[in-house]
Image (cartoon, rainbow, N blue to C red):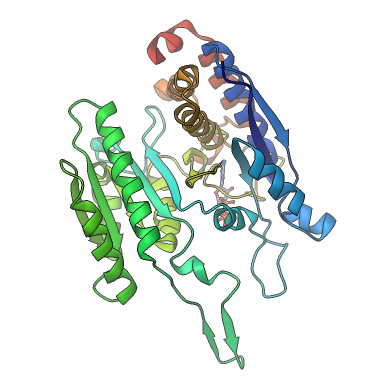
Length: 372
Ligand code: ATP
């Protein structure tokens, strides 16, 4: 019998403090329904407000507690008005990626039936892909190291390494294989998005990707230039399966992907390494809606499902795999029929309504049967 697993919970700033309790409540309820071992949660303080209060955004104590936990759940961090002297924002969520070598930024994009999409084509209902954003190098390797010379020239730089490109490519091919196994009749495909026609670093990334691709039989490999890829994102995103890309491109394209399925409130994410993982909604702290009750907790709840699924695999807990499926089914059940329209899409459903609908669906026998 597995002992209670420990989750370090960092609600962070702005709506992070609102969506995190909702997501944890949903996770705990789903685990209770499926009979899994209970989670022990430890709430930790970090982020822009912590920086204002204590002068440190991510203390050593918080780092140690996060490292000791079985998983890390993060709400959202950063506030536009709170900045370092060079004008950049406080981003401990990015620091955690470097600290724990969380190289795979996993961003699932799935059309939830009943949630409006901006695309008129009915095939938009079939949008279901995962973008893997390399999260420790690329242009972000320059974080904190960029220079401005004589108020005349500014320089940042990009790093692409063989080791990380191999790891993140393998991660994406393995993910494509798992997705195909779970979906009978579904053909696995990995799309690399780069700018290999212009930059040496991207040409190298493509070469390493190709080497990894040649070791995976039965999974199609495709390569797109980032500019051309935007046409596919808007024109026929349902043709994507899994995508792997550089950090900055992934940052931009994952927001574009979120817009296809309802916006940031519907975009979950996980930053995964070999030993640790951080789960958080892809959105930021959204100070424009903080405290209004309008924040959509769906992305946070789906990130909770990703955490439970990851823990299920690592600790071989079948009830956790069931709980992850139950949460995903409950989200689908809550939005089915289009009656639950969230504020950012012109409706009136906010935090409370969405959380209550998902919690009710988790307890509904029909959802439990569908997840089983
Ligand atoms: P970051 O730089 O940390 O990614 P950001 O400043 O780019 O953050 P967000 O904080 O994600 O942006 O907010 C972008 C827009 O999306 C805002 O108008 C915000 O209100 C909206 N938004 C973000 N998250 C949600 C949510 N969960 N529910 C509803 N609207 C949201």
